[in-house]
Length: 365
Image (cartoon, rainbow, N blue to C red):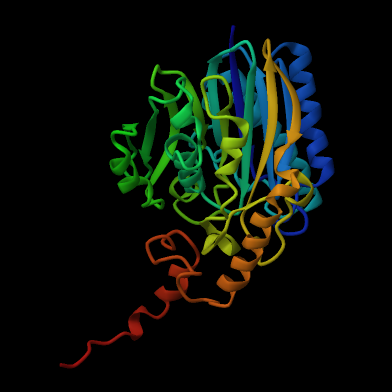
């Protein structure tokens, strides 16, 4: 049977500052989801948060970009934002950039990762949620999961995935995409996704066309034309039986890579794998972090979740992330902790530098 998994997120209000979605806002979202389930709009759901982002995880049979599902998410976010504004929670309705709903939430502020799948006899999936970073945070992990045999042993020893995977890469500045097959176009893939401020992995497919993973690639600054908060992406990956194993997928996050975001969306910091319990970024509004929830999909129902980064074996990754955070913070307002001018284009820094423009004078030769 075909099932669609939709993960739609938005920053609609938090306490204090950018730390955590208040419990009463989560309850409004849960009530909205439960009503939708009783009406038959969705089959199952899980409501959660990663830091100040509210995530709606839904299963249904309506396919991708469904107006019913996206409309449900939009109305849910609006209900939550209404209370957030009344309570004066920080960033109330921050990601709701457009007033009128136009069929789906793409280009309206919320982030979306969803895929329609034909359920296997056993269908494990992992939902990833990030805070204080951008969609490019998934570039390196997705490469490791689906193209690096030093991370994913199955690429070498499992005949079901030995042929490799196909990557859909988006140029977020030009609004274009390209498909690259790995391992044969591995170097071409790396030539793009290493330039993470512009090229982002959107989807990964098995060579027979079956979808393996998808990430949200919405860039808030490109939608709004100014800095309105970090994109805080979400992603979904299928595991086992023709796809990388759960452990291979999680292994890619054991290295706390440097990602853009952190304080005011203007700094680089390590992506720290955390459990939901500690997904509350506070040090310099960070460091950036990622949650992973594991589900089994059964006849359209989501069973779970399991908080996968709650495992103590990720303690070393967290320790390294904390050490890297300390090192990067010592740079203060200097690169490479501070982002490059190109990446700061849509932040608040250009307004500061603009005030100095008329004070510059030619250098006499």
